[in-house]
Length: 359
Ligand SMILES: [Zn+2]
Image (cartoon, rainbow, N blue to C red; front, side):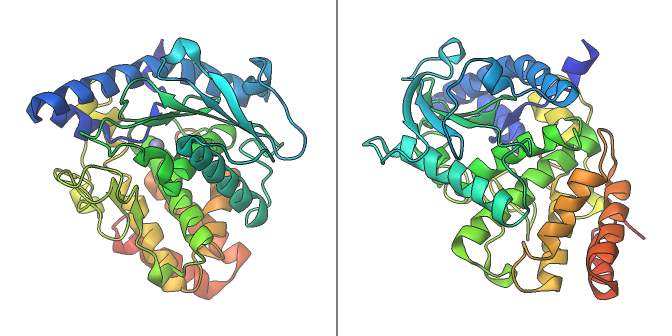
């Protein structure tokens, strides 16, 4: 049972936002928030078990569960037709290389996972999430007006959004949301960072880092020109502009508690209260997020060319399940020196010093 306590539950909606809306929101928001929280909680144990098996035995659970394997890139989108988890993955709608269909959500999940695959393949020379061509499985139209998207340890799942918390259809429209969730798969297969406190905040931050990089890469956008927002335009406008801001942590939505400096670190217990967010994993991730933003903008050019490669190499080769902020920071500094040189190493060290993680 101990492992379940630290189970990654990788849904995109900030749990403290859902919890606040469940308590203080309008009647309609309360109803939507409670539904999103309840379903996310139910996914936790499945994700823990699948993720652990993937890592320990190097199994592809997608294959073991009998999903279709197509030639070339393995990517399939299913429709859960507004059913719940017992119906996953749902009805097969579109596989790799098959033409676009009428359903926009299916096409967006297809395009978003394909773009994420391309980024990992072309920029980081990684073949899918497990590095061995694992099939990318997505299921859309999960639940009824479900306000969340998540990686369950074996596949991606997207709700339609209720229009009360998330805009209808927004969760498949946002490429960085898709890449964020899929990166949880990469982290599961590599560092295996536990989803609790600082290690969990590093896990969350890495998903934001590569989520933002996949978006920047698809737009061919330099670090200086990126918006550094995660899930821009996914929330209903009265709640805020995005889920997180890497350049200005704490400003993405109303009630955003993300710090951008260790002086403001929010020390929360890892209990089952969604307001405490597994010990602040979506909250304190603002600190390593801001360090990445500072390093990437200081290095200039395209963020994936240097900063992204440094963070990726650190993720796959240096981080461990319980790595803390200061250890991760030092690891990126070391990797920057090994991969590039003194100037890059200084830029990375300065970034972590600016957020108070290194002295
Ligand atoms: Zn996440």
